Length: 540
Image (cartoon, rainbow, N blue to C red; front, side):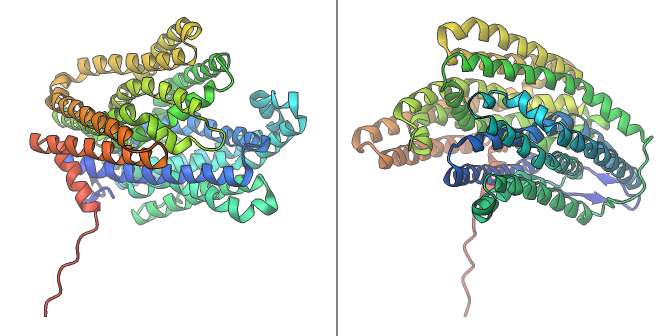
């Protein structure tokens, strides 16, 4: 849980700057992300057990995507770009101004979102047709089911968005524990609802679980804010100057999100033309790629954002650069070995997770082919998160949005040029080009504004790359030995992942330990604190 020191004047002072503090904050978010992803996998298993891959499951996925898309557009993009930086700045001032802003945001958000839910209830058939008109070609009843599920799940827009607002407030107060568990709580709702209600409610049980999980998020976040001494119910001030500032910061993000949505639509359209299974192969590879990003880069970036916002507001340029540099090195310290292991051990990992039932060895080969390309873009995406958040902390949301438009242009040009010759692999390369162009442009622009960024980054980059190269060689050799000596099957995949992955990580950790990197020491200390301690011997 983030530290919070309140003076007699109601001013909240920021925590001291150190690599360990950033690692602890990022560690809390990483643990929450890990719990979320484990429960997310359990959610998919439960859905498969009780409903398989029937058409009604597709209808539910379309319906469930609607509140998620609306949340991402309305609150998700605003959270890191506008809400957390502005709230973090106000958290340094008098508590009355901070709590007044909270009441205003919750009131305006609650009323506006309620109207949106009502509109979605009324327009559910039209939304279903817009997103899933193809259902009507083979089962008109499926389109009607989609509309009904959209109508039932529409309150999730309000719940997701209110939870997002509360999360931003907790981040501003450096309280990370409960926000880290938010998505895990949501997934738990579906995991519990399906076994309990599937036999009586059918596919609707998943909507019930979705709403229950979203409601639990709101309750938990509100409770933690009250524990922090924040009064949620008080008179709002609709003319609060921070409201207009938040909207101004969010406007370019909204424009960038529109462009991103169009890019996703084009990606799906081109992928569908390369074969009926291409989207599934790319989605499975994306799932493997996104896990380490969520556990490391996203968590560390969110943990660093409030500090970056406060240091920029206070004009502490040195502290700002040091925090950003430590965040970037910490991200690379964790993401580079993950990318190496995904590249070396992608095939046994894919077999272990997916290759059963209708998922064939041919599917494994195509997923691994996509994954090997995705891991290149994963390295750029990992660095891109803290770079984006560094601009958000400076109150600059236009540049990331404009760079996003440029990178989408890079994607479109690469996709149209490569898809005909390389099929879905061309689209994966196009996505990698988009990630690389965005990260490189953002790094160049940020370096011009803050200066000497390369000095903070290069300090540990060579050490990380050298250790990762040796780790790759060790993991590759152990994987080849396991493939040669162990018979094909589940046992060989487990041995390959355990021996090659464990051996490679041991080499990597040992080399970084000898190099005495502060970030590596912080991670090691965090791991030691999380491990169960041996009880002290009893005397007498």
